[in-house]
Length: 319
Image (cartoon, rainbow, N blue to C red; front, side, top):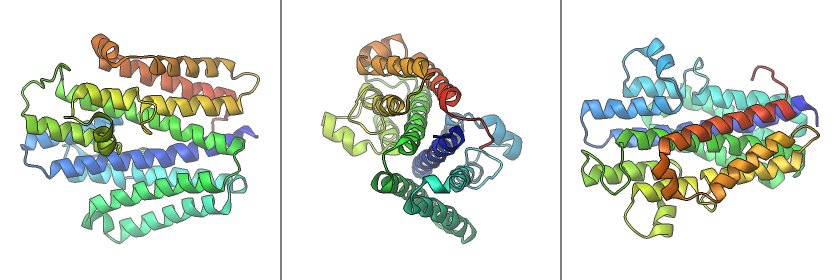
């Protein structure tokens, strides 16, 4: 496959996944903001959302004080913010258009229709009327894109580059979410959250689970109260949890093996080693050495994998 084609496919799927992840985080932030809380606590929540994407400096340069409406506008419809839902879906559609011939008609039409419908949603005021419903729509369009890809694409190199982009992006986002949310409560991981009421703890941890569609999964797996240790275990080490770090890295490793070439051995080795750390890791050991340090190192290694994939397979045009 031409490296330019692989590049467009890889980034098409990354942008689609990023739009969904952004919608997930904003939806939880919006719902959490409706709970009774102080103004300072509400602002802290919106700061956390910007922090996940490392966008606090960019936001304050454009909007100044952190407010609910400011963050929602910046993260949804600001075309100058490369991580906004508008920018991500535009990037996904532009990359899809560049490789129209490598996609099935259904995959292309899904991407194109999402972009056209997004404009109708934003210009028609649907987002302002019901932000929660808008975020569900973004998630649905991402689910549809993956489903159509899986159901209509020949499982060749084009398909594997689409999967690579999806799961590399997912691993990055889940790690960022965990790092920011766990850091926010300064948990000692022994069932005591300093300075917080039990009800606040429940809403905080359940919000994290809901943001990655894991609330019902948690109940099914653990059948008990929500604890920080188990949330971390579920979202880091459980292979059978679709959005966990382990599950995402397993997909990255499997798809890398299917597109391997003469100079990708080192990238494959690094991906395999990272997967092994998750496959044989224990949550008590991770927490004992420090979750923040573990996740920071994980993000560095995922970024390194992305750079390796770029060197081995892709070109580097503007996306």
